[in-house]
Image (cartoon, rainbow, N blue to C red; front, side):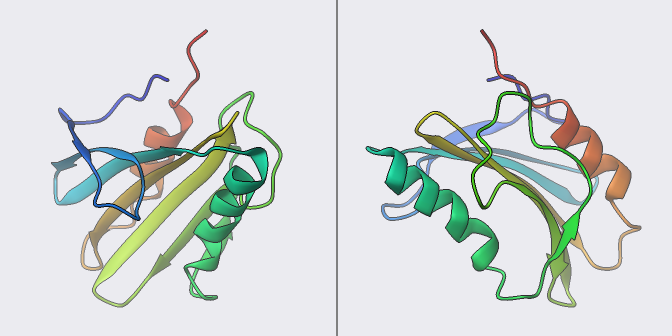
Length: 129
């Protein structure tokens, strides 16, 4: 996979029970992150993907914009925006094979709307042959 970050990302393993691997960096008060997890079965991958928007508990709204080309058309694929008053979060989730991905942009609520920056980050994610 190819993801162009607006800053140099660090890669780390997430704590057990959470996403598999994580690459993230900060630029201009925004956190850009890409997490992925490989599942053992298609059913587990579908469940993992479907759980991503459910974590928002109705606080997120769906955003226009496609997921990366060749992503599986499973429930849970898409883009969302939400927040808690102190921060805004935009995310995109999709699956390729048994791997579920989540790209995220987090910023303070006082910053100008990130729509262009988050969309640019999401739109450049692509699968390498």
